[in-house]
Length: 479
Image (tube, rainbow, N blue to C red; front, side, top):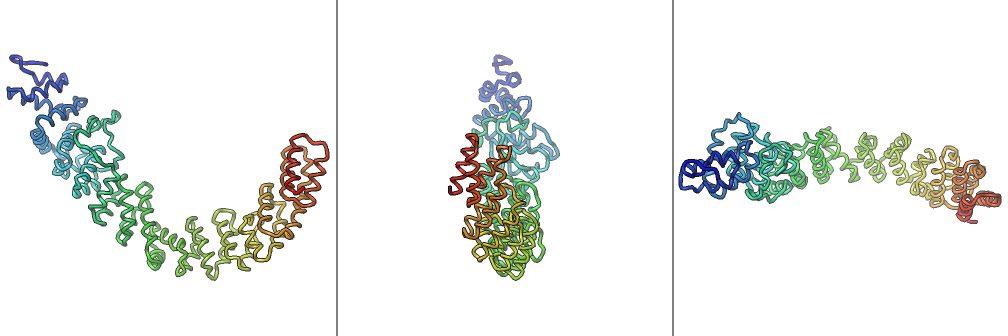
C-alpha cells in the first residue's frame, strides 16, 4: 500500500497505481482526509477514461461502502454538466448514476441532456430496459421517441471493440440485473400505453427490436386511427416499413368490404390501397367484382393473380374476354394464372379461348381435364398434335403423360402414331444421347408404331447400355 505522512495511505498514489482494493480499505480510514481522498479517487476512477479498466471495480467499491454518498456526488456532477457539453467523462458520469441508481435515479436528468450528444446506443438500450422493468411509462415513451435513441440492437456489454464507456462495465448485471430483452420491452409498452402512444413509437420507428410486438398489437386493434398513422411508413425500405406494411395488411383484412372498396376508390396512398385491393381479391368479394376485374391487369403480380383467381369464381360478364387477353400476353405466372382460371370457368367460351392458345401453354392436367370433360378431348388432341414440331422433347414427354391422364385412349391414338413417327429416325442417330432420348419418348408414347420401331432397333446390333434402354422402353410401351 502506498503511504504518505506517518504511514498513512496516499489516495493519489493508490489511484495512480490502480489499486482499487487499497482505496476501498482507505474509505474507512480514521483520518477523514484519507477517507475523503480515497472517495474522490474512486469517483475519478469510475468516470475517467484513463482508468476505464478499473471503472467497474471502483464503482463496486463505492456501492458497497458509500452508495448514498456516491449517488449524491454523481447527481451534483451531472448538475454541473452543461447541456451542450459532450465528453467521455460526462457520458461515464451518467452511466455510473444509472448503474448505481437505476433509470429512476437518472430520469430527472434525461430531458436536460437529451440533445447533448452524451448518449450511446448501449446507454439508451440499458435505460429502455430498466424503464420497462420499473414499468415507468413516461420515461419509456421519452426514450423510445427521443432523438438520442437510434436503434440499439443489443447491449454490447464488455465489448472490447467499443469505445463507449458502458462497454467497460463487463459484469453490469451485478449493478442492475437486466431481466428482459427488447421484445419484452415492447410487450410491457403494449400493456401500459394507449393506441395513440403505441402509434407514436411505431411511427418514429427507432425501437427496432420492440416494434414487432407493438405492430402486432396495433394490427389487433385495427382502427381507422392506426390506418391513418401508419400511412406514411409503408414506403420505408427498412424493418419498420416492412412491419408497417404487414400490420396494415392485418388491419385491412378485418375491415368490412364497403370500407375496403372506399379505400381503393378514393385513391388513398398505395401503401393502403394496394393491400385493401388485395384483401378484396382474396375474399372474392361479390360487391367488388368490377374492381377485381380491373385488378387482373395490376402491375403487382400478387394482386393480379389474386384477382384472376377471384374472377374465375365471381365470373363477371367480361371475365372470359379479360382472361383470354391476359393468357395471350406470354408465359409468365400471371398469364399462366389466367389459363388456370379459364379452365376453372370451363364455359364453352372459356374452352374456345384455351384451344386458341399454343399447345405448350395447355400442358397441365387440370387444363386438359377441363377441356376433355367439356366433351372436346379429340379436338384437344388434334390441337396439340399440330404443334408438336415446336415442342422440345421434355415438353413432348409432359404432353404425353398429361394426355394419358386427361383424355380417353380412343382420342389419344391419332397423336400417338404421329409423335412416334417423329422419333423413329432418331433411334439411328449417330449420337448416343439422341438414341437414348428417342427410345424414352417412344416408350412413353406407346402404341403400335412406337412398339414396332423399338423392337426392330433392339433386334439389330446394339451395345449393352443401349440394349438396356431399349428393353425398358419396350416394357413401358406395353411390349
